[in-house]
Each structure stands twice: as structure tokens, then as C-alpha cells.
View (cartoon, rainbow, N blue to C red):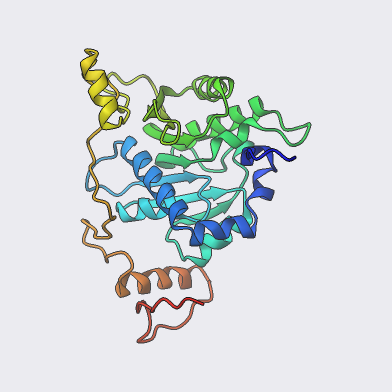
Length: 297
């Protein structure tokens, strides 16, 4: 009888094979996957501690279908995304994301110039570098190539917030040590550390010389966990982050005066961007950006 336990995606196939057309479609239609991806991207963006009301150029490593990139857009930033899966990038293009897309294997080093980005995020991607599907793919070498190139393409003082799913303590140590070896400062933040389902690992990294003003983000806790820590005398001791409370439904409004996301003006602007890039885009009409009724078959 076959085991009912599911193995990790990283153990099933290389990322460029696993994230095929069928898998990419899930990130287009699954509301649960979209919500999780969006929430983690919002958390990673928060950890970058970017200046308020200032547009930054950010890198999204393992950008996939562009869901995390849209979070950066809505915060008023420009972004560039890279991913190893052509099918995931095809979905991102079909969604007409504003960011520039690059088909690239991060384990070979990132192909960007020195000091290009103000910050970087990555959602559920870097743990793939811990696996090897070919004899010439050495995880330690690929991790070092990735972190060294990430360090190089960030401006001095720039941060990276990388969310990932380590398989065990050895992978956690390997990822952290590789980042430190590449020259980064910073460390690990674990949100909801006592929850088996909600626990999330983030590497929060600082590029450049040691900065006395740099402080690690505080980890998030469930209410009962916070109360337990307070009762134990910890008072939340460095593991609480309430800087950004969000309502149940995400707001699409913008504070920078630009078109509201999903509005007709916003859609027309995105189509114009695609035209300037040489893409074939349908002509504007009275139906552009009009909400369509949901038809179920």
C-alpha cells in the first residue's frame, strides 16, 4: 500500500520541471495559494524597512507568476523578477505585470550589475538550491554563487528578506552560513515559531559594512504565544511585530497618486507599458477593465 504522506516538491523534480504549465496555473486560479503568496510578500517587504514615500528598485528572486511583484507595485516600487521556470514567467506575462522579467537560474549567480537594487525579496525559492539533480550541481557552490551575486547587486546598506522552507536543521544552517560567508550581516527571523502550520522562516540580510543602526525585525506571534511569553517574563522579547496591521481584505488604493490597481486607468497604463516593450496587446475599447460576471459551468 502506497504511503499517504506527500514528499516535498524539491524532492520530486528540479524546479524548471516541477513548475510546469499545470503547476503554474494553480498560482493563477487558486485563491488560497494567491493569498498565502501575497501575505508572505507583504511580510518580506515590511522587513526591508524601506524609506516611506520613496520609490525603490527591488529584485524578486524566484518571482514565479508575479504575485509577489504585484505587492511591490502596490507599494509604489519598481521591480525586476527572475525565475528558472519558463511556464511560470509565461503566466506572469499573461497577467501583464509591470516588472521586468528575467529567465535565469539563481544558482548560477544573478546577472545584474553592482549596486543595482535598493532591496530584494524572495518567496519560497532559495531552499531549492539545497537540492542537486545532477552530479555537477553542488548545493554549497550554488548557494555561495547566489548569495555572492545577491550581495553584489544590492546597494550598500540594502536589505534582502528571503522566505524559505528548510527541510531540517542542516539546511537551515547551510543557508544561513552561506549568506554570512558571502559577506552579509543579519540573521534568521521565525514568525509563529510554535505553530506547525503557520511557522515561516525568513533570512533578513544586510549588504555592506556593519551598521550600528541595523536591527532585526521582531518575529510575529499568535496572541496566546505572546501572552505565554509575557507571563514567562519575556514581554515578547524581540519576537513581536505589530507594525503593520491589515484588514481581512487587501486594499488596492495607492498613496502615491498613481492609478488605483485594477482600475480602467491602471489597466490602460499597463497595456501601454506592454506595447512599448513590443508585445501584441488588444486595442482599448469600452470593455477594457470592465468587470465580467462570473459564469460557472
